[in-house]
Amino acid sequence: MKALFFILWLMSPQQIDVESRFLEMQDEGLVVYQEQGEFDEPLFILHTGDKSYEYAHKAEIIEFIETGSFEYNDFLN
Image 1 (cartoon, rainbow, N blue to C red):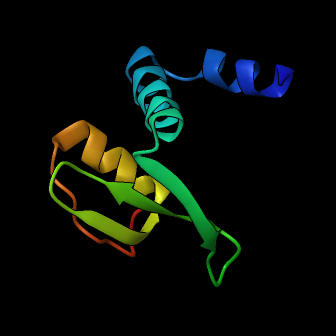
Image 2 (cartoon, one colour):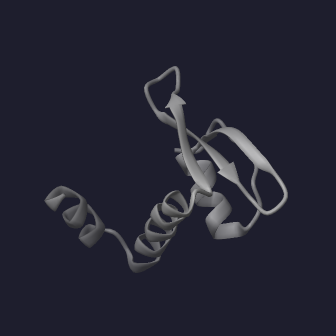
């Protein structure tokens, strides 16, 4: 837990807001852990108002939080 707070302390304020929103969305059930991907990265299901996106990477969900639109993108880090 201390490591999480240290990492958040190092991040920019905008990044903290995005990370906080990601965690809130998990608590609200809008982002649900699905499984580990082929490279051991976690994959999620993202529930929006009218659609659900399976096998979404965290970076894709972060982009959705920032822009309001979802797009699958295997090249996001």
